[in-house]
Length: 203
Image (cartoon, rainbow, N blue to C red; front, side, top):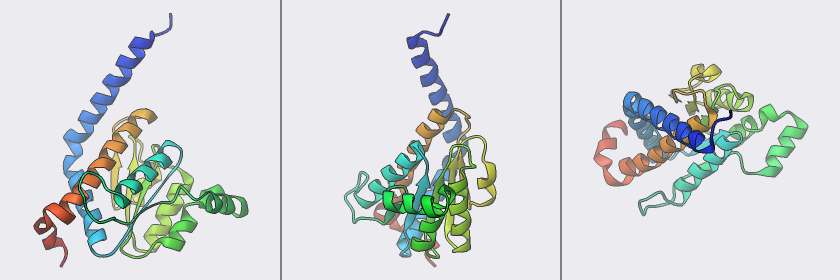
């Protein structure tokens, strides 16, 4: 007999809650550390680029919008760019070169030393995200990876890796957006609410 619809709901909710709790119990300090690094990059005139595929592409656009518009706090716009949104660039690069290069070429065009690339891949092995992280490293950008339990090649290419302890893609993505929201909230905290906490890192 197949699992009931109600049981599917309860099982997914339980898995999500357990994964979220496990991640934040072990990695809350890491979330603060990464957020501080993002705020520091912005304070020094850098920008934050995002790349990912599918649902992770949607997360890129979501988080870039939170930076450019606002999260909770009324404050100046912050430079967040999703590399997932320009269909002409994506199809031109995909057609002329390879889909593996669609983010890498944009990092070449828009990235600069001191900027940040946040690459989101639930497997940690998406070829176009890996290529973009490699290019970001070449350009002396800060690299942040967001993945699941399997970090793949991402682990060797990132200054910081957010690894969600799950192999269930929807659950990983749900915790990714929670972490992304905290990045946005803590960036605002460091830049506009508790500037003195960031000052020692500005030297």
